[in-house]
Image (tube, rainbow, N blue to C red; front, side):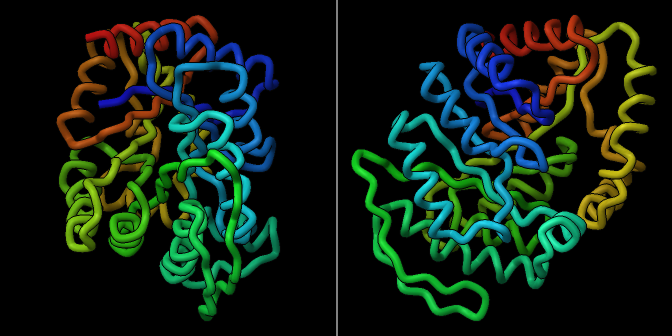
Length: 300
C-alpha cells in the first residue's frame, strides 16, 4: 500500500512546499491537496511538482460541475507535462450546498453528470479527439500538449452508482470517512467488479483518513466531533455514516499512540486500499509525531 499525506487545510504555499519536501525526504509516496473555497488545488500541485522531485502529487478532489472537462483536461495535461508520471487528478461532484449555493449551478443527476464528464475528460487526457453531444455535457475538442502523458484519474465515490462509474471509466476511486470494514465489504469490491466487467485494469483504491498520534486520545475525539459536525450532516456523508453505524465522521479517525495508529494503517492495507492518504490532525508537535510514524510504517 502506498502511503501519503492529505492536506485538508490551506496554509501558505511556502509551508506547503516544505511539507511536500519533508514527505519526499521521509520516503512517503504522495501528498494530495483539497479543493475547497481557498486555493486552487491543481495550481498548488503544479508548483509542488516543479519544486520537489521524487514524490507523487495529486488533487482530492477538483469539483467537476464548475469546470468544463475540456478546461480541466488542458490544465491536467499541462501539469502532467511538468512531471511525467507524478501527477494524479482526483475529481468529484462535491455537494449541493457548494455547487448550488456557492456556484449557483444545478446539482442534477450526479452519476449521469460524472459518466458524461469522464467520457469527455479521459479521451482528452490521452490526446484523443472528442465530439460529445450529451444531455448534460457537450464538447468538441482535442487537447495538444507536448510530452504530456495522461495522468491517472481518481473519482470521489461512496455509493454504488458512483463506484460503478469510477470502475468503468476512471483509474480508481478516492473515498473518505470510511472504516476498514466499509472499504473491504463495500468500496473495494464494488469498484473492482465494475472495472473487471468493463475490461479495465485493476483500479486504485485511495482512502483519506484523519490521524493523530497521541497519548491522550479523548480530547482529540471530542475536538474532531465538534469541528467536523457540519461535515457529518452533509446528506451523502450522513448516508454512508448510517450504513457504517457511526454517529459522525470523527469516528473514522485513527487516534492513539504509535502502535494503535500503525495497526489502523495496516488494517487499511488488508482491506484492499492501494493508497492511504493521511490527514494530519492535532497541534504541530502531534502532527510531526504522526508524520514520523507514517515514515516508519512506510519503511516497514
